[in-house]
Image (cartoon, rainbow, N blue to C red; front, top):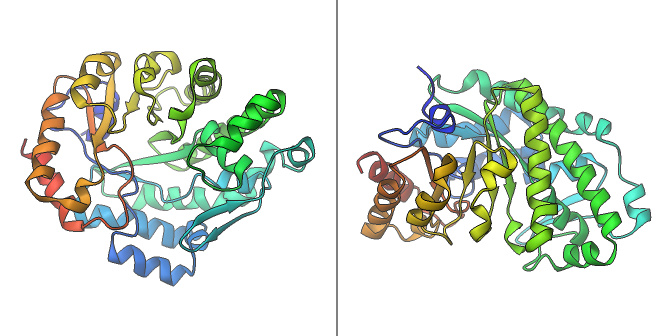
Length: 342
């Protein structure tokens, strides 16, 4: 029997949508915290195939999600290209910055990335054999714009201001940076598919800060290039795209890029998505992650309302953003029960 997620991504309208959660392997789970402590630190966990596979499997064992997503981080690609990467406790990632021609010249080529990233491919291989037969395996990467915002600023920022500044002041350099990340992402995702990923997702967490032609150039076009090349290599591979907070630019994004599914955040309603996005194919989303903290009847009502609103077409139930560390695992179980009984 074809896996539920793969059926939805192929455009099938199902009576009950497949369910998984962004960041479903994470700090809200005590078993994750124990495994991370064993690894020593976050990057050591990412690069330890056995432990990375273990934390990927933990939410599957606990909740029976319809899909597992590879445990890794979007900033492993810039690290593989030669950027320095480290994590500051309580503050998040830090990177050496790319703001000048000299900085860019220090980056490695796309051919250089696989030595660094080979443990990630091994994690995928382990998972492809360890997951229950009904559970789909999702690979992923950060979209070029989002990855570039970190590479230019050296950290996450509220407004992606440094990347916008470089884009506006030295567009040629910024375009070359985007192109390098795009090419690396194609190779990275290809290796994940070869190792056993059945679908891949492209996370553009900061797409919503792009406007007009910049959205076309730096969110839409890189996604289109990545998807076109992946499908040339793997014709049956479904691809999920997540241009978060794209608003009206969600409309037509699937057709423009070739994505099989568009993930939506919770700044748009499920009813709006049914009318404007689902007409082109599968939609993924879009419960507010805050419900995983607050729970209660509001969680049940909203999860069921989303399920009903998107029932007329292919739908993958998910959150509108990643689950947060302060979420209650019991609320995750409550959400799954609500969706499956809607």
